[in-house]
Image (cartoon, rainbow, N blue to C red; front, top):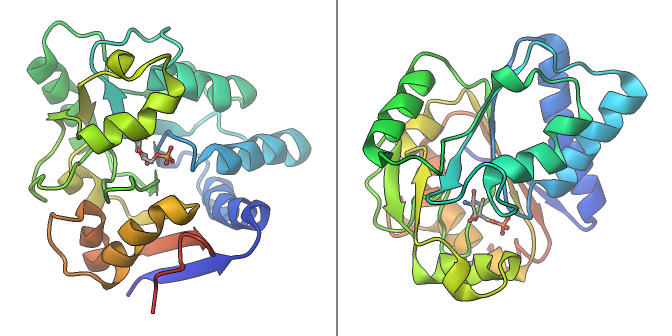
Length: 242
Ligand code: GLP
């Protein structure tokens, strides 16, 4: 059963989703977190930073693994997910940067980099995985059609995904064509999943994720089979739910 929470106000949504992360870290200071990028988790990260500053929740013993990274972007590229995590979370909390893991987008050997990252993941258990959802139903960069049993792999990005993400780049041609992503098998091994979806652009994917058939035309539909999933939706993202 999916736990679904619908909010009128996005700030309350971010606070509630962040509360789940914060209470885990307080109960288990060496928690292992799976992290996401994109617009959706930004508000959640702001609440974590605020709480760290006000209430001193510590991330000193926390370890993190990010879902994905664009292939071809160096860590200091302004649109790399390494740069995003640095800017929007890591520099504002007391996490040890040696404990933060993101696939290397500038690798000259993507299959080897996938194996390296996947070995890190199989050697640990994610206590909680933060997710967004693509407008085409992707999670991480597992695009429609990706088999559910794949682990970390290289993916060719959908045209839809490249268009959605073009807002962050000067022009569409600058959006990488490929990425390294955790597979759905990796994501599904997380003990708890917290997914954030905001806005009407996500409404169709959200409906398919919750009320559609479990198949890889909507990768997020696999979450129907996870035993501890929490979906934080705003009214617009939830508007097609019956
Ligand atoms: C991106 C990321 C995903 C993210 C999704 C939604 O491309 N690879 O991890 O969840 O697409 O992004 P946004 O939150 O910006 O809509």
